[in-house]
Length: 146
Length: 117
Ligand SMILES: Nc1ncnc2c1ncn2[C@@H]1O[C@H](COP(=O)(O)OP(=O)(O)O)[C@@H](O)[C@H]1O
Ligand SMILES: [Mg+2]
Image (cartoon, rainbow over all chains, first blue to last red; front, side, top):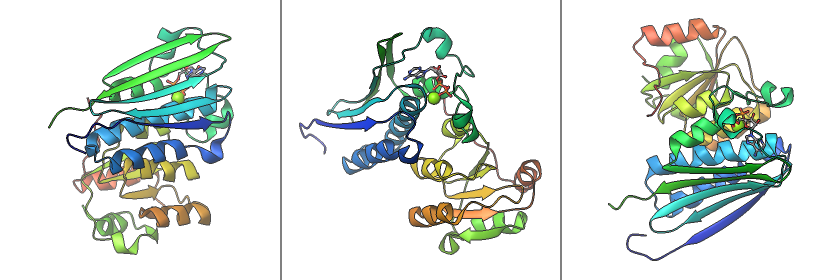
């Protein structure tokens, strides 16, 4: 895709509690990025962040959307939901903090490492949340010129 | 270290991935927490875990893990093994506990995964 002026967008609807489909959106994101010829280390970082965001929508939200946007300069993954919102974002960002229910923990989720993992893999992260309204996560990755 | 060598060191049974036996891995990661696995695992890695649900396989695909070893005699359901087969991931099961399995691979020279900074 070198030199091309492209911009693509994909939207995935994620249902609350839908563990059976968990990871499908992130797998698709991975596939798309690979097809675009994005560097494999970057694909990995984006996919890990997307997977954590997808799981948070399934486990913690009442459902929402995971979006992928790719431009020649950047990759942006957004996760947006309509609730319940995060009361204390600083606390939620701490490693080990989790309110995940037992059903998620039994599957190995709920280590409280998801948001920190997203932050570590991203070049920039923007989180906005309001209790009763929802959460918006914007995860940015720069595509370095080669 | 080749998957075949891992199988022998752990006295493990191979549930799928005969064609992957001579594939090489350069590190190992052991955990029962999905997020730990997501933050430590690199590619060309063997994952040791006690979790046998389908999510482990999906995550292994996302992370491009070469092989998964289920420890403590755990055996995933046939559907789970089939998923791994379709994704080209080798699946092994060993009677050794997590501690013993890790110790054996580590002493044989296979390093752990460290977190990417
Ligand atoms: N989309 C969301 N809606 C509401 N709360 C969320 C959302 N995402 C994360 N949280 C809150 O932030 C906490 C930490 O999230 P995370 O670091 O991913 O850990 P985990 O998912 O293992 O609990 C969650 O336990 C939950 O309380
Ligand atoms: Mg999470």
